[in-house]
Image (cartoon, rainbow, N blue to C red; front, side):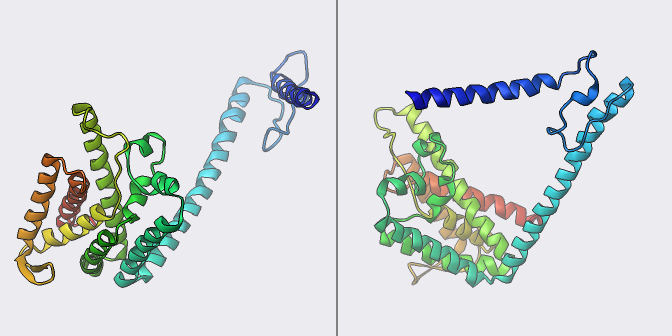
Length: 289
């Protein structure tokens, strides 16, 4: 009790201290201006003799201060941007693809040793996570797998199609496309979940969640297909099919999953990656990449 009263007393004294200085900043004609404390300012506030000089002091000084702050902030931001681009441009497509695969494998192993609730809260996408403010899961879920077959199939697609995109458009473009596909897939998944919550409350499970690099890999793979529709791809490594036919098959299959309400594979997430691929394709066609 004595400690609580002491803390309460200290808090009260602190408040009174600041109230005192706050009131002392008000101009009183009966007091000279040099009584105004200068410890709150970057430089002393000299007495003013006219309304014009007062406005100059109150407006020009903060403007100069914020200009200097903005200038230094822009310098720092430009420095980090140049350093980031310089580092990225030194990487080869193989380096970036290997790094993305390594990150996925690391999170896959983390599922084996870390607390399950921690992993669910930070490496899966769900309405519950977004409502709780865990927005980072819109990206981290795209590096997260719990099933060996899932991560192997995604990483194979990332390697072959990612290498091609990286060679044609650069490592910076490849990284941005992967992250954009992750966010696009998360957005489509959340919209689909919200729609199900409104239309089928008896079937929808509020704790339903998703994970995997499928949306990001889908964005990379479909962009490569859109850019080279006449190329020959090998389905399951030995069935030759035209690229455009494979693209139509993948998109159609995901749309069917949405219509049938597939609870094991999220067609909406894959369609988010497809939408990102379509936007990237349109920008590439216009030379904006």
